[in-house]
Image (cartoon, rainbow, N blue to C red; front, side, top):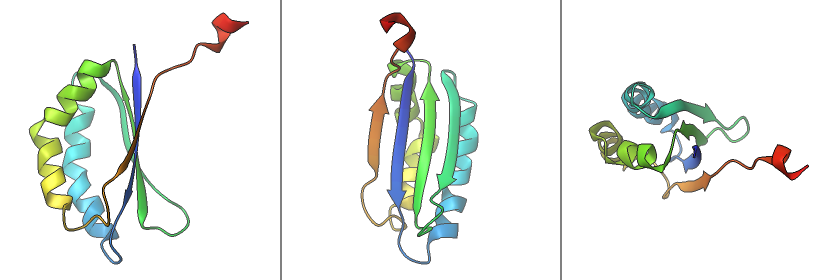
Length: 101
């Protein structure tokens, strides 16, 4: 079953571009992982210090593999002093409304 992960990350003032730079290699590598269907970084339009990762995986095993990857761990280490707080992570599963009708 597909899994969608949405992660909200707030960064310290003046660290927005450093965060984007740190995220770049992780995003590129993540898009090539088996089981990753979609992996994007968005920036909040107002305030500009909160970023949103929009991720879609084929299943939970793909999510776990991503979190165990070297590039994900390297990004976590590289962004440790850039982020203002722990990210808010929302894990979702699809709802088939067509079968409810």
